Length: 246
Length: 265
Figure 1 (cartoon, rainbow over the protein chains, first blue to last red):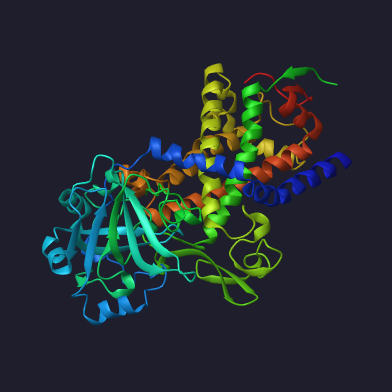
Figure 2: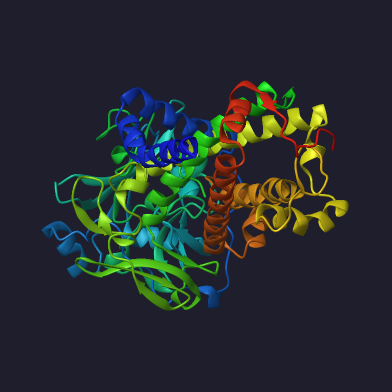
């Protein structure tokens, strides 16, 4: 009986120790990096293939949560909103043969795709919306990435409370995915300011944080290591995976 | 004193203890991940009308758990409790049961996706090695075992003096192992895969099979609860059925046969 009690209490202690031990290991840089190795394995083995499921009109969710950094409130964005985004221009530059500036009227003419897809947030919730816009690949084809180009980095207008701007990145393979789009319309309406007007990314094969809102510039680069925190995205810099497939 | 037999191969013992570690890491990091969206819906999309479970904190200092629309106050346990940093806050599962203890979805995912690989590789390696050696069949419940299930339970309940004749594993053990190996393990692996990075895009039917994205989360959670149930019963049995002999066997491989233990299948 004593043995049983001893073992039962040992097992209870071991269980109670899981969280403190795990937390201590989590704060060990070497172990933390080891855990991160799974991401590389997943990226190498699973990769970015296939298409996100397309839904029907009647599947569109009544409410699409606004769960990003706050909608920009600076004077530049306020002016854009006031003028109905007529003066918005998207800059596409970096490691490209033809640096380009796309006025909004040109972007509207280029709209060539519509999708009804699910948005899966890393937190765990899922909603469906209809998006219309331009295939990211067709923009990249116009600017012609140079041979040393590997990533498209999306610079955004929203900032966190420390003033850090939001950004995201896709490799050029992911950026050429047929469902990776620069969305300008949501549920048959121009995208509302809170949902990233006038131009946001929608990448339905990746977690929601990849679908950056309020894009102002696309920079094509060979590496994102020297940009911002070096993780390739705002949330990646906070420890979230760069490879965020669904 | 009974005869000593070599019961557990190195592969079984190593994978057993590695699995203990992986299971603890997966449950604690899984609860951490759950905390970021503390509800489970029986539907593809997030849909409060199909909500099965929700843990929340309607106001400071109060935690509630809602199951099929019935709300219970669970302050201190679920919804409101240990924040993992010495204080208390609104949190579905408390800090003492999550990895990391404090709320950190990014690191919870790191742990979960890492130990999912460990558990999967370890499980497959054990399954293959055990199947090759032919020991797997000792663990599988057969139709001939069914009439022995109740007599075995009656023996455990001390309603019967002797257990029914059986092999290395008794009929209830076989039932438990068969359920874990062929129902719960596939369920938790496949629902986990449906939620894993990059899988849904290449395997929609897998997500569809479980009723959609959110439903897969629900099945994954249910499979976890059932595996915890197995763990509790398993631990209780080890503690009550000759704990030193059992622990010794799973560490050294050598098991001392009791008077009721069978040796053949």
